[in-house]
Each structure stands twice: as C-alpha cells, then as structure tokens.
Image (tube, rainbow, N blue to C red; front, side, top):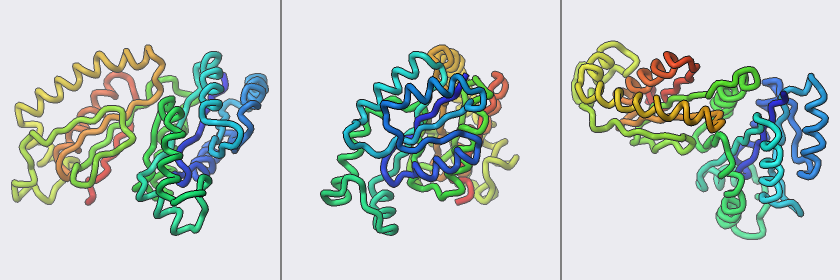
Length: 283
C-alpha cells in the first residue's frame, strides 16, 4: 500500500526544506500540483509498486482553497489508511525575520508582513486541524529540522506502530508548540539547588538517583504510565500515527530529562520504538 504524506503549513516555515529532506529519505515528492489531480496521481501510485511513498507539497493557493485541499485529503483518507498530514508552523517573529532576511515576498503580501502572516494562519487552520504531526520550526536550524523529519518519516512506510517522541524541555526557554501532551514536573525537588548536582544533568547517575529517590517522582511516573496504558491503545485504535509527549522543568537539564528517559523506557517496554529528545539539556 502506498504511503501518502501532505506537506503544508505557513509560508516561510520550511516546506521547501521539508520536500528536499523527504526526497533524500526516498519519498517521491510532488510540489504544488493542482489539487484536482491528487486522486489521479493516487490511482497511478497504487498501481506502481515503486511508488510506495508519495508526498504532496501544498503551499500556493489561487483558485483552489485550503478547504478544497482538506476535502481531497479526507477523500484519500477514506480509501487509504496511510494518508497523513505534516503541518509546518513558526512564530510570527520567526516568520517575519525570515522574510526580512531573505527579502522574499510573502505570497499574501498586499499588506504588512505581520498582517499577511495572520491572514494566512487563519486560512490554514482547516489544514492544521487535520494534521497528524505539527512541527514548529521557529528555533530549528536546517540540520535539526532534517533530523526531526528523518525521525518521523524515514521508516514510516515500513512501521505501522505508533511513532512516539518524548521531549524534555525547560519552561525558562518556552514550552514546545508541536506536542500532543505536555506535563509539568516543576513540583519535584530541584537538583539545581544542590551544589554537587548543579553542573550535572539528568543523563548522569547522581542526578537520576536523586530525582528517582523522591516519593513524588515515583508516584508521578506511575500516574503517567497508568494514563498511557489507557491512551496508547485508544490512539492506536483511532489510527493515530504520531504521539509527541513533552515533560518540562525549569531549565530542562535535570528533572525533565530523568522523567523523559523513564517514559521512553516505558514506551519501549510496550513494544514501541520511542525517540527521546532533550531540547535544553546543553544550555
């Protein structure tokens, strides 16, 4: 069965970079094809064994609207269990900076850049609501972006399991936007205030042992795993392809790192293959 992926999102958020990265991962990428041709291409792909992964880049809207694209996505999903949507977004500040630094014109630029971004964000809400995975590229460089896409899509055609990513982060640097579930562990005792632990991270034994020695830590992990015992089968039954779980503490260096590692162990024990990312551990 052919694996279909729709790449869409905000102008300036990285659609072209995503297309290039997916081509390198072996996807057959079609950029800005008329929406009405999507069913015909899907029919041809299903008859061609070599076209096992097809990605459509959807970005420019003329006579066709985001609602038209959403209709075609829903139609393809009705006949294929593997039709997914990747939505790329970024903060207004990041998008404005990118347009100013590259001197590119925003496609809706008959008004101030900020107003054009706001109007596009509103237009694309229908596609964002359909997304299986949302990637916020605001703080990602090109290498981090390509690595993120590789983690998500390199083996997706051969792996029908739920793709789980566990992220640790620090609230001091802002909460990640592209997550499904976010948990706050700042109520746990902070190793930062223990001089001999401050310079270490949650990837090192002294910090891990300190955090795991707390009764509230063990209870919190038990509550979370009880929740995931219920949620994961429900998500799989619904056909959800991706699950991103974020755990945050103050600086993203100690408590959240330990908990993210523990949750990744839990998911692995359930037969999944979680990806673990420690966003702020090196700050």
